[in-house]
Image 1 (cartoon, helix red, strand yellow):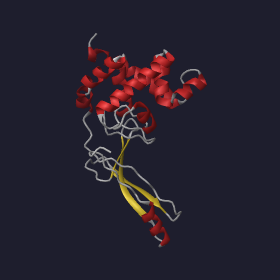
Image 2 (cartoon, one colour):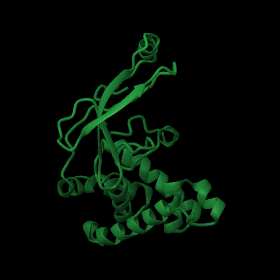
Image 3 (cartoon, rainbow, N blue to C red):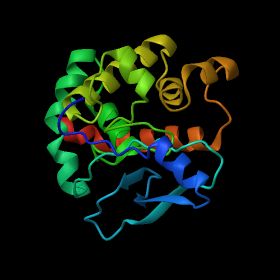
Image 4 (spheres, one colour):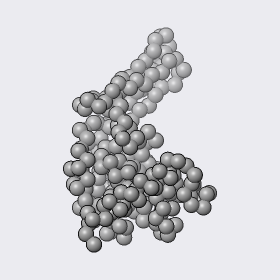
Length: 211
């Protein structure tokens, strides 16, 4: 595990011991949910937007195992957006994807926060699920270079698979099995809204990379 990552474990044995003693074991964490629904967690908040979030065990005998990332201050969106353009352009060219589309996915997925973790466990700029990151060969999804490389490669795979941007984006969000099952964008409000939002950003970002 890269040295810059830090994990905080709520150890099952400790919770079990507390439960056996008839007490409730608690671990205090702090949570911030941004405008895009991305959940940011830390046990050492330095941003006033974080609020206490308790996870507890009350004697069931099963512990809670929580993976936390060391918090770093969130970047300002205006600065972050431009700061990743060179990386996005490089990986878009490498994989033959429109850089405006890659940037639109980054915007929709993480709002340009490389430390973002979703409530479902997706990680980094392009919100790669751990299994997807592993299958792509991404060892550190919180490292922007690796995340954008892997996310753009996966987006390319979905574009090749469906030959349709809307279907590819739906697969990126809901998984290809859902797109295959419904023969297109699945009837999930979250996915339908996601596809429309990414395409709106896509149109906005066309001018960021020239012609």
